[in-house]
Image (tube, rainbow, N blue to C red; front, side, top):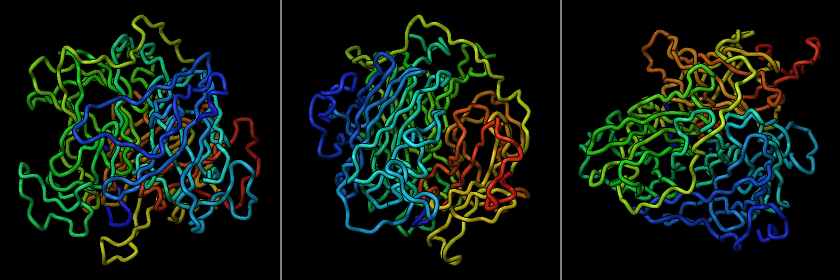
Length: 583
């Protein structure tokens, strides 16, 4: 954590177009937010019909109560951040209109390889504070123009609506994914302002019938700048020694579990501000069992979720992580992993079974403190939502089928049973602009062992790693800094094999995982070993891996992997500029 760069653990024209999400009113001119303490309302659902989901989203911004800039996606019906619901094999056609006011300011940087001529579609090369694009986090779709390219696509306010068009893979695991901007250098600002929404691939009950027929809730937890940055901590919290308070206005991790957080949180846009954390409200029928699908769409905040009844932790039945059912390996049946708390890094998702409180019993959704390291920010204990038991509670609008047809068995060998063709080592590191000032600006790196640390260059296009489609690799990710980082890679999922050098029994997949921080005393740097899956033909192309604390990503902590086609000759030329360690 550093004051400038911070961070176990994303129109009326529709009425003329058949099958597009129906327009009911003109898009809202701003980005509305509910009041503190409001009852939580789920995002509107936009569902595919006859195998196609057509959507128009308008990207807007407005000013919040404390002067901060809000960003949002407004659908044609006026709803904000709608949930996109699709089935495996569906075609998604999404037209994104950038409605931010144009600025006379010059571009802050350019995108795409140096010297390349911009195309009419995916290489405007102009990047200002008003540029944007979309990333479909967790989907195994090609990193290509109009699909999931974030390296060259930069949509300007003056552009015509940009069309994203791709098919959800037929074998995409059913679960919770999300969409958010991924414009390098500006991602944190836009996501922190609220630019994010859920995307659900239907059919989780076909993978695990333990959730069949359960009412489901979509809960999106976002972070934002503090509404009350100068307020003292709540009187109900322990008094912290002054030496543990951060004087520069950004809350450094103080190791106490209390104190001022780095950012406020909201749940489905209902703010839960420091210092008293007045919770939002979730109404449930007494002792009703539901499926909760929770997305951590925070820019920099870690979550550690728990549900308490009269202060007692309740069992949460985890069924999917990062969009993938836990029984994806095909050997665990209708497996439910019962836990009392769930760590959720920024960008990650958890889907779990929860039972509501009995009538008259107080229930509370909380996030527990997360130890982010001496260089990390303060993510303390705080309430998020009160669980209110009521016979008159309105049922959630969606529920999985009660009598599902099981998904066919995967034809691909389980990732944990496939031998890797090689092992690579990468590491996170940081460098202060002023080594004598811990709050000075910081450059963030993720480096392939053997290469020279360098911040990500959006004009380079030269991959740090070259892999072959059809293969599997093991990557060891070290953390040489004194704060937690969350490793994420686009287009694919991976399996966690080792944590802190010790094998773990985790036969399921992730797309985001935190890497423990270095305390300066251990004989080895903390690390995780991941089995990376390059077998899917959809991963062919060049795409990024990075820390999902977006200030770190914007600050340079990102690299590129190029996946070459399986049938490409081993003797095919590789650019002489590709570092030797990349191959």
